[in-house]
Length: 115
Image (cartoon, rainbow, N blue to C red; front, top):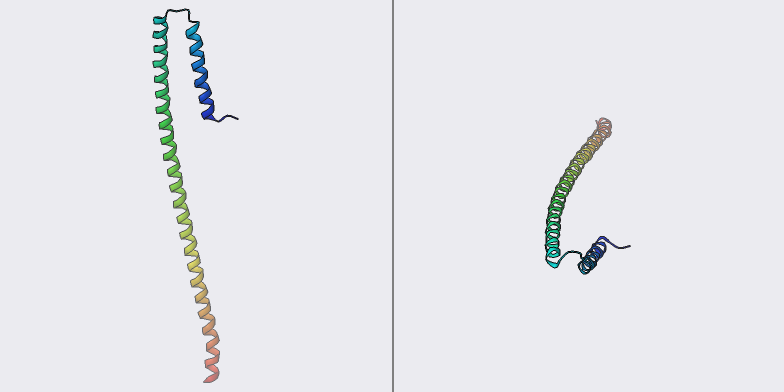
Protein backbone atom coordinates (compact mmCIF):
# COMPACT_ATOMS: atom_id res chain seq x y z
CA UNK A 1 0.00 0.00 0.00
CA UNK A 2 1.34 3.43 -0.91
CA UNK A 3 2.19 5.80 1.92
CA UNK A 4 1.03 9.41 1.97
CA UNK A 5 4.27 10.66 0.37
CA UNK A 6 3.83 8.30 -2.57
CA UNK A 7 0.18 9.28 -2.92
CA UNK A 8 1.12 12.96 -3.05
CA UNK A 9 3.76 12.23 -5.70
CA UNK A 10 1.20 10.32 -7.78
CA UNK A 11 -1.19 13.25 -7.38
CA UNK A 12 1.42 15.71 -8.66
CA UNK A 13 2.33 13.48 -11.62
CA UNK A 14 -1.36 13.11 -12.47
CA UNK A 15 -1.82 16.87 -12.30
CA UNK A 16 1.14 17.43 -14.59
CA UNK A 17 -0.12 14.89 -17.13
CA UNK A 18 -3.63 16.34 -16.96
CA UNK A 19 -2.34 19.88 -17.47
CA UNK A 20 -0.23 18.76 -20.43
CA UNK A 21 -3.19 17.09 -22.12
CA UNK A 22 -5.36 20.11 -21.39
CA UNK A 23 -2.82 22.41 -23.08
CA UNK A 24 -2.72 20.21 -26.14
CA UNK A 25 -6.49 20.15 -26.54
CA UNK A 26 -7.33 23.60 -25.13
CA UNK A 27 -10.17 25.41 -26.92
CA UNK A 28 -8.77 28.81 -25.88
CA UNK A 29 -5.86 30.74 -27.33
CA UNK A 30 -2.41 30.45 -25.81
CA UNK A 31 -2.64 33.84 -24.08
CA UNK A 32 -6.02 33.03 -22.51
CA UNK A 33 -4.81 29.61 -21.43
CA UNK A 34 -1.67 31.09 -19.83
CA UNK A 35 -3.75 33.64 -17.90
CA UNK A 36 -6.12 30.90 -16.78
CA UNK A 37 -3.23 28.68 -15.66
CA UNK A 38 -1.56 31.60 -13.90
CA UNK A 39 -4.77 32.33 -11.99
CA UNK A 40 -5.21 28.68 -11.05
CA UNK A 41 -1.58 28.40 -10.01
CA UNK A 42 -1.84 31.50 -7.84
CA UNK A 43 -5.07 30.20 -6.27
CA UNK A 44 -3.48 26.80 -5.63
CA UNK A 45 -0.40 28.43 -4.16
CA UNK A 46 -2.52 30.56 -1.83
CA UNK A 47 -4.53 27.52 -0.76
CA UNK A 48 -1.36 25.53 -0.18
CA UNK A 49 0.09 28.36 1.96
CA UNK A 50 -3.12 28.58 3.95
CA UNK A 51 -3.14 24.84 4.61
CA UNK A 52 0.52 24.92 5.58
CA UNK A 53 -0.18 27.66 8.13
CA UNK A 54 -3.14 25.69 9.47
CA UNK A 55 -1.02 22.56 9.69
CA UNK A 56 1.74 24.43 11.49
CA UNK A 57 -0.75 25.85 13.99
CA UNK A 58 -2.25 22.40 14.56
CA UNK A 59 1.17 20.86 15.17
CA UNK A 60 2.10 23.67 17.56
CA UNK A 61 -1.16 23.26 19.51
CA UNK A 62 -0.75 19.48 19.70
CA UNK A 63 2.87 19.87 20.82
CA UNK A 64 1.84 22.22 23.62
CA UNK A 65 -1.04 19.95 24.63
CA UNK A 66 1.19 16.88 24.75
CA UNK A 67 3.85 18.82 26.62
CA UNK A 68 1.32 19.84 29.28
CA UNK A 69 0.06 16.26 29.58
CA UNK A 70 3.59 14.93 30.00
CA UNK A 71 4.40 17.59 32.60
CA UNK A 72 1.21 16.73 34.52
CA UNK A 73 1.98 13.00 34.38
CA UNK A 74 5.52 13.60 35.67
CA UNK A 75 4.19 15.77 38.50
CA UNK A 76 1.61 13.14 39.47
CA UNK A 77 4.33 10.50 39.42
CA UNK A 78 6.52 12.60 41.71
CA UNK A 79 3.62 13.13 44.10
CA UNK A 80 2.87 9.40 44.16
CA UNK A 81 6.50 8.52 44.78
CA UNK A 82 6.64 11.14 47.55
CA UNK A 83 3.54 9.71 49.25
CA UNK A 84 4.84 6.17 49.00
CA UNK A 85 8.21 7.25 50.37
CA UNK A 86 6.47 8.87 53.35
CA UNK A 87 4.42 5.71 53.94
CA UNK A 88 7.53 3.53 53.82
CA UNK A 89 9.39 5.85 56.17
CA UNK A 90 6.50 5.86 58.65
CA UNK A 91 6.26 2.05 58.43
CA UNK A 92 10.00 1.77 59.13
CA UNK A 93 9.67 4.15 62.09
CA UNK A 94 6.72 2.15 63.42
CA UNK A 95 8.74 -1.04 63.05
CA UNK A 96 11.70 0.50 64.90
CA UNK A 97 9.42 1.72 67.67
CA UNK A 98 7.76 -1.69 68.01
CA UNK A 99 11.17 -3.34 68.08
CA UNK A 100 12.39 -0.98 70.81
CA UNK A 101 9.23 -1.59 72.86
CA UNK A 102 9.55 -5.36 72.59
CA UNK A 103 13.24 -5.16 73.36
CA UNK A 104 12.60 -3.09 76.47
CA UNK A 105 9.86 -5.54 77.57
CA UNK A 106 12.26 -8.43 77.24
CA UNK A 107 15.01 -6.58 79.07
CA UNK A 108 12.76 -5.60 82.03
CA UNK A 109 12.11 -9.16 83.26
CA UNK A 110 15.79 -9.92 82.95
CA UNK A 111 16.64 -6.89 85.10
CA UNK A 112 14.02 -7.84 87.71
CA UNK A 113 15.44 -11.36 87.98
CA UNK A 114 18.93 -10.02 88.65
CA UNK A 115 17.86 -7.70 91.47
